[in-house]
Every structure is written in C-alpha cells, then in structure tokens.
Amino acid sequence: MSSLSFTTAGESHGPGLVAIVEGLPAGLELDREAMDREMARRQLGHGRGGRMKIESDAVEIRSGVRHGRTLGSPIAVLVSNRDYPNWEERMNPWPVEAEVEESHLPRPGHADLAGLQKFGHTDVRNVLERASARETAARVAAGSLAKELLAALGVSVHSHVIQIASVSAPEREVLEPEDFAEVDDSPVRCLDADASAAMVAEIDRLRKENESLGGKFEVRAFGLVPGLGSMASWREKLDGRLAQAVCSIQSVKGVSLGEAWEVSGRPGSEAHDEIFYDDDSGWHRRTNRAGGLEGGMTNGEPLVVQAAIKPISTMTQPLRSVDTETKQPAEAMRERTDSTVVPAAGVVAEAMVALVLASAYREKFGGDHIDDARAALTAYRERIGWRR
Image (cartoon, rainbow, N blue to C red; front, side, top):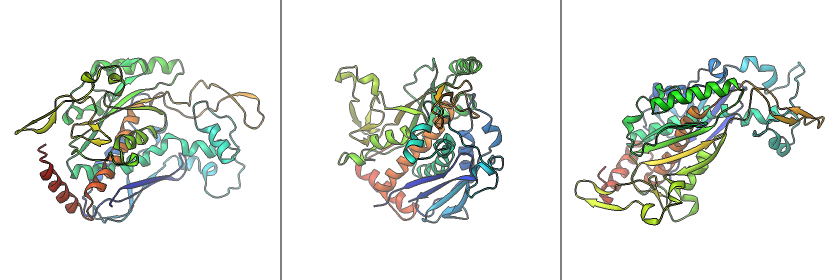
C-alpha cells in the first residue's frame, strides 16, 4: 500500500530545520515559487515578533527532485536558520571553548519543565529549542510538497482566522476556494474587514499590557472525493488523524470537525446532513454540518476543521516560576516573542491537513507515477458516479 509520511528535525536557533517526505509519486511537477510563497505565508500576521524580521524562509531541496520533478524517492528539504550565526556558540552541535550559561527558568504553559524532567537535562534550552514553534517552518515545507500533490489531484486547502482574543468574525457557512484569494492581504488573515480591524486593535491594546493572545482558525479543503479514510479501523479514521495532526501544532489545545460543538446541543433532525441525488449533481447534501466527514471518511463535501490556540507561553511580563537549580521562586525566562501567532498557525494547519489528505490519497489510489494516481482517481470517480 502506498502512503505518504514525513518527519522533521532541527532546533529553533540551530543551523537549520529539515523535513524528509516519503511517498510522493514520481513525475510530480513542483512549483518552486509556490513552495516559497507557502514559507512566506507562515511568517505573516500582525503581532509577530522580531524573529520574523531576521528569517526569510525558503525551501532548499536536497534530494528526491530533479529538474523540478519528483523522482519517487524520499525528498529532503532544508530550511536554514539565518539567526544561527548569532547563536553559534550556544547552539553548536560540537563542544565550544566558551562557557555557555544554562537556563533554569521554565515558562508556565511551555514544554520546558516537563521536558527537563522527562529527558534528564539541566538546561531548559535543551528542551525549548526543539519545542519551539520555529519547528513549524519544516512542517510548512513538507506541507508545500503535499499541496503540490493535492493540486495535481484537484484539491485545494485554505485557512482563515475566525477569532483573536475576544474578537470574533461573523460566521460564514458557505465558502468557496475563490473566497480565500485575498485572505493573506488581511494583517490577521481574517476574511471580514471589520473583524480584521478589530482584531488588530485588540492585539495592539493587549500588547501594550504585556499580554499574549490566543484565538481560533479554520481550515477548509475543497475537491475531495468521498471515501478517503476508512470506518474499518480506528487507525484509519480520517477525523482522528486530522484531529491529531492539527492538535500537534504548538499551542493548539482543541480541534473540532464540522459543527462539532454546535450539533452536540441539537436534536438529531438538526444535526445531520440529509442526502440527495439528481442527474445533474449526482450524490450531494444541502448542508455540511458534518464538515465533510462521516464515519471516519470524507463524504465529498468540503472538509471543515477548526482549532483553538492558547496565548503563547513566552510573555514580555513573565509569570511566576521556580529556578530548577536553586528551587527558589523566580520569574520565568524571557525570550524574544510574538504577541499572537493565530494567523501563522492557520497556515501551519493547512500544511498538516494537506499532509494527512495527501497520505489518504496515496493510500487509496497508489501509483508509482503521478499519472498512475490520476488514472486510478478517474476510474474511482467513474465507478461511484462522482460528478464534481
């Protein structure tokens, strides 16, 4: 069975971040500029910190691609850290002559203390460098490859911000791919202009109070065929795989699929999507409360995934903590930080959703070459009478 998998490596202030993607078919044409645009989109958003002024992320392909087309072998991607020269003594993979001061001030809400206890380190930096959201640059690099495959199969993945702190955008039940064409023009990646302005004002207000801000974002995928994932095994249920993938993003604390929280308080007649068929549209539904997922499988409607992200734990006014060496009360460590990362988190979630969906397409349609995958998809669409 064909499948797609990826892993990342690297530390926030180390030499660079690496992603290795396995399972892409041969012959897939890659758009280098589109992949670099994905990297730039992760750095967008009002409320970002000084690190974004230093880094200018780009995808450096080191294997698995020749003359712009995939070879069918593992693809290695490097994202260099331009800030590394400023950290070379502190983050060098090899011993250095200079004495490097350890950090012993874990931050509430971060991986610092639990990671210190788990791995037996004395220096919090041994944990925080890998736990940092800088790691998501490698995820977006991997996701840009997954998006290239999905685009070749007629699928697009988009995101937008629906809440920052106390400011929420009006609900928009019906969205089409073209509605996202200018979402990145908003300083907070929100589709509603008035809500976008209010979110910016809220970020500015709370930033002056030394606060960080959380919020919510939504990812939608269009063009999916029914039957991705499976009800046959809990491991194959696509909703579970999507929830795990999105919840693995740093600071994400909750994931909902479709109108999960809303339908929990409704009677069944108002919770499900009735099924219709006609000669023009074939099988279809007139509502999408399930968010495109039924029984752990796609049902052909747009996929809708929402996530809640907490305020980031690195704060300009540090919270109370304890020095791990002296065991005395202390303020948590100070690091260069953002006020909010909600707009960027939506882009990262696009990448994670794309990676899960690309893997599901590989599992269902296989093919060593992209043309084989397209042929299998066409045959499947004809067999089930799918007309979209």
